[in-house]
Amino acid sequence: MKIINARIVDGTAREPVPDGVVVTDDRGDLVYVGPGEGAPEAGPDAEVLDVAGRTVLPGFIDCHVHLGMEHGRDLATRFADDPTVETFRTADRLRRTLHAGVTTARDLGGLPAGFRMSVAQGLVEGPRLHTAVRIIGHTGGHADFTTPSGVDTSGGVGEIADNADEVRKAVRRLLRDGADVIKLCATGGMGSPHDQPDDEGLTEDEIRVVVDEVRRHGGRPVAAHAQGTAGILNAIRGGVTSIEHGYGMDAQARELAGERGVFVVPTLSTVFDGIDKSTMAPFHYEKKVRWSGITKENISAAIADGLRIALGTDAAICPHGRNLRELAHLVSLGMSPMDAIGAGTRVAAELLGLDERVGTLEAGKAADVVVCDGDPLADISVLGDPTRVRCVIQQGVVRKNTLSD
Image (cartoon, rainbow, N blue to C red; front, side, top):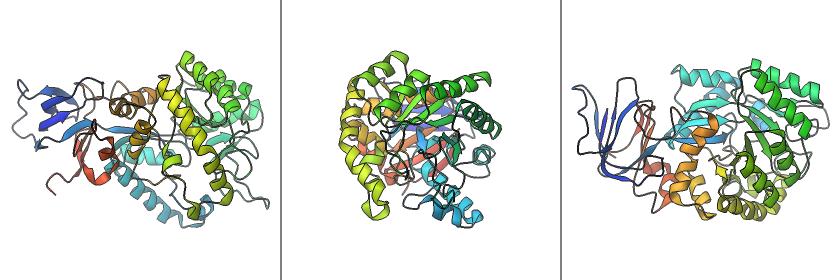
């Protein structure tokens, strides 16, 4: 494939390349990204895609989604439905996410590893997937949706563990079930009925056990659901790879995260796009409203401090298929458009350990490419409108193309 007449923003933070060309090989890898002058010829059978001056970027990465769930539907409803129908609904969410410009996604609870394999085998279209499968938490904590009558309304999304030995076993079960990342609850949360975001979840020692057990089995990222300050500090000291949400990330926590190189995935879409009183339980709505201002203040400070921020939306808490609205939220809190694009490409790839293959448009990497209308460096919001994401290419295969519409 040869993409011509492109304005290239390659994800490296280098200046855009006007009148650029992208060339891929028959394996779907990039062989050339640069000025049109001097670009190599494509093969005689290669598809030529004229993007007519539109902006070409790397495929985006959403590091925090829940593709097995739907915005506005509680977990109990999901697991009361026919599982076959729910499988096809998940396939639809995968497709919508891909068509929004997300070519790689990390599901942090509720998506079995079989969906990752189905995408990889071409059985369904969707982002390249990493999945946590289930979420480790303690009884009564953020991963526990058991009703007073004893019914688990999460349908098994939670992996309950109440001491260090149980935590170690929980990690082993998740690795057995195909987890690419281990997610733990270091705090309570917004949507869980039994706790508050300031409540502590797994202890610092239990978090260390998670990190150690993952290390013993070859290593994987450890993501901490962490909203209140005390739990954020426990998670960082315990050795996690990323802080998910980070709403209560005060100056001490930001300093410690910076020292240890911990990634922050702020999921701002849950604050900007995820508050709807008509679709939320009263306890959930009250917590969201109370924390929204705190979140914006602390994440703005994290951006100013230069922490390693990767894009994540918590899609399901906010709508699926509008993932790149998160970029505008980052910019609204002080991040430059170029850095916001980097958070959704280069930095996100580093978090997932995929930076040798994706995250930037450079020769030798996978041809994950997004083409959008307009100039996202001047108006980042163009990427948040799926209708303005005109073409999505994944490993050299065109998954969406509305360039001629």
